[in-house]
Image (tube, rainbow, N blue to C red):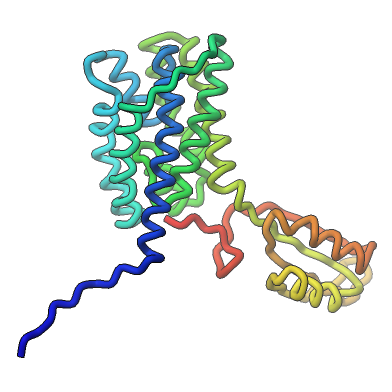
Length: 293
């Protein structure tokens, strides 16, 4: 009996997800290339991370393009990305590195700003936005991004902190090979980049944990479940001074839901005691903001 070959089905949803991720990487890479070719290279600045090392190599060996140097320096980092993050992240990062290198080679938009401080500030804003957009995808553009994602997923270290720590060596090399002034401008660029990248990757999906102590506990719980459609946990508590039973309402919400929650609680019990805390990561169905890599 003749057997028919069965090919795996590719859903429109999975195809759309791949195209979305590739689109984010292309957009972010082009934005980063604007900062590199429009400000950093013309002004003689040095970027951070692997891109910074590639710029240093380019300054020492002008005949070697930044894009080629970036590709070469990324080779050992892909093994780390595959081992410690996952195959999907590795494949997207591999594609992202080639897209980033292509963008650096071909996207060149002059930036008409002369003041060096403003140049470092603007380059940090542009590069941070571009890097953040890339990391909103399922991959990265290689380089320091791989190390940042690895430390975030394994040790919960914020990506901006990893970027700053990793770039200390780049600053030292910049100060030795070029000048202390160049290193200081690079420091400004790195700091602004890290802040913008953190804002786009995790800041826009920031979750808030809220604890509420009120005499109208049951009504507040019903209102949160109905109006905000968020889960609520009631924790047994007792007043330290009065010794009376006073349960605690605990919930996790998005940043946009914080103001409506406070209005709801105040309308029910103006004397309610409310504590709001920032969260680094939340893992869970619907409300979680755990990075997707």
